[in-house]
Each structure stands twice: as structure tokens, then as C-alpha cells.
Length: 429
Image 1 (spheres, rainbow, N blue to C red):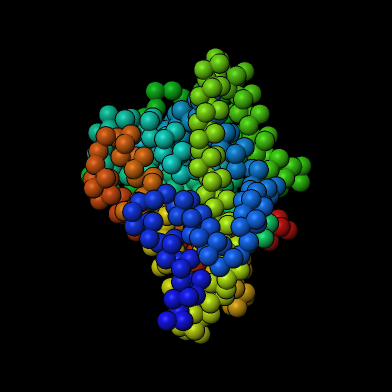
Image 2: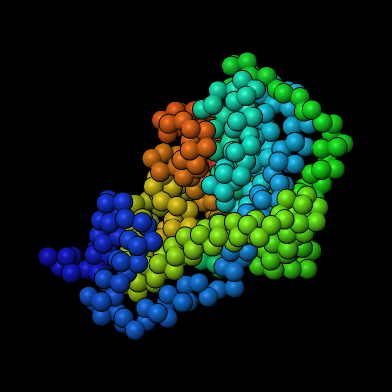
């Protein structure tokens, strides 16, 4: 009976029970924390302080800036110009439009930083275009949806900002570490779309405009990651300042170059969309931060870490178990919530085995990117299914080969940590 008086047990109970009734993750996290604080007298007066402290962190300021920058880039027509440029290069090969989808989604990750936002921005253009060219609609939607999951791996990444804040790891180092693994996953996906396209006889579609003209039209869009990442690695701006620069750069391109942002309604759409997306992220951040603080205070994190380490002394076995757990979590929860819920439990294990936190961050992020496109939740697939007007069952079946390819890439990233640590080491980060 003594175990029933353990606050750790009740914290988990009041967190998991609401999820069974489809209560939003932020509400479940916050409610569980508040109940335990009240019942075990942990100080209700600390609620407001911890709630504020959860978001009053300078690195988190980059999140709303990158979100609004993504919506500005979308409204500015940058996505379409980049698609035209990549299609001019690869559109004529077998499965050319599918290759374009993977390539542009990989690049757009450096603009948007959000998987669902990338699906929305690119899917409205690419999915109808691929269907018109003879590609199966479920294959088209799956290609865009899965490739858009790279958005949380390719820098600048909101996921890396959150991980860096929790694990106290350099965000610029994480950005650099995500480049090669992100390109590796993109390569595996491109091979997959080529094989499927060849077996299904999906042909490429040559661009109606030349490469030179397509490049000129896409030039300022292609310059976006150079401006953002160049400023960070050149020591000119911090990641937070780079996010603000991205906003003003996007406005400059949208207003004066592409001239797609012209009316008050355009600005109103951008601001409203950004506020909604930012609110969702920051509510999860505050409630999950409160949950993590309570879990630390009552000893749940220490107990869980010790229990996991007690299962085996083999670090590879523990690593496989962690990845399996993260993959399952990614099927059910959003990435931001998973970082705040699971990472505090995993940090002692990182210290125990002396794992590189930068490599672990990349591995964890790639794993969660796979989870974003793996049913039953699969936020990216829901957005893709909604855009293409097909069922979740159809898009889920079509996504399976891509999920397997991404898992193979994840295995390579796990086995070869130098893929993640090479660039940060070269850049001295």
C-alpha cells in the first residue's frame, strides 16, 4: 500500500489517464503537475513563477520568430520559385517530381523549421502537380508528408532549439550537427522514391522554364538559409537574432522582390497564423516544463533513470531500448512534448555512458521526425491526407517504404556518431 502513496505513481497516472480520453497533451501535463503539487503540498504559490520561468528563456524567443518567418516565406511565394528551380534541374529524370518533393522539403526545413507547416506550404503545390503528371495521389501525398518531417532535422530547427535549452547544449552546434544526418535521410528517401517510381513507371516532367530563369526567380529564396546560418556561424548573430533577421529578410523578399505580400489582409493572415502556431507550442512548453519540475522534485526522474540502467549494463541494448521508446512516443505525442517529458529522464543515462549530447540530440530528433509520420497520430500524414483528399489508411500504406528508409538512415546515424559531430568539430562549436 505504500506505493499508492508515492507521488511519482500518481503523477504518471494523472498524466496518462486524460490521454486515454484524448485530452490535449498540454492539459494532461499541466493537470497532473498541479494535482501532485496540491496534494503533496509542493507549493501552489510556485505555480505562476514556474509557468513564467518555463518560457522566459532567451533561446525560446527564436521559436515565434522562426514560425512567423516560415509563414512569411510561404506567403511570399518562395516555395513555388524553389520548386520550379529544382524541377528545372531534376524534373526530367524518372520520378523527377518525387525527387523534387524530397529535395524541396529538405531545403524548406531551413526556412520553416516545422514539419506540418512544410507539408502545408509544399503540399498545396506539389501534390496536385504530381497527380496531374500521372503519379498516384497516395504516393504523392506520402512523399511530401514524409520528406517534410526533415524540417525538424535540417537547421534552423525549432526541435534543436528546445533540445538545446533542456540539455544545456549549444544550439549553433546542434544546427551544424543536423546538416549531414538530414542530408543522409534525404538521400535514403530519394533512393526510395526513385525505386518506386521506376517500378510504377512514374516519369519525370520537364520544366517549362529554363534553369537560368528558374535560378534567377528562386535566387533570393535560395539565399535564405545562407543568410540565417551564415549569420550564426559567422559569429554575427545568435540563433535568436538570426530568427529575427529571417523575419525581416522574408518581408523584404515578399514585399519588394516577389511582391506577393501587398495588402493588410496578407499581413493579417501571417500574424494570425503565426500567433496560433506559437500559442500551441508555448502552451506545451510551459505545461511540460512544470511537469518536468515536479517530476524532478518528487524523484520520479531519478527513479526512472535507475530503473532503466538496472535492466542492463550493455550501452547498445540501452540505446536500442531508448530508440524504441522514443519511436513509440513519437507515434502518439508531438516532438516538443516528448523532449520535455522524456529528456530529463534520459540526461542521467547520457552522463552514465558518457554519450555525446550533440550526437544524442540529432539521433533523438531524427527518431522523432520518423514518429511524426508514423500512425496512429502522424501529424504530417493528417495534413497531407487533408490536402490530397484521401484517407489516412491510404496515405499510411504509401508512407511505409519511406518510414523504413528513414529508419535505416537512423540506424546509420546511431552506428556512426561522427556523422553528427564532424561539422561542429570542424567549426569549433
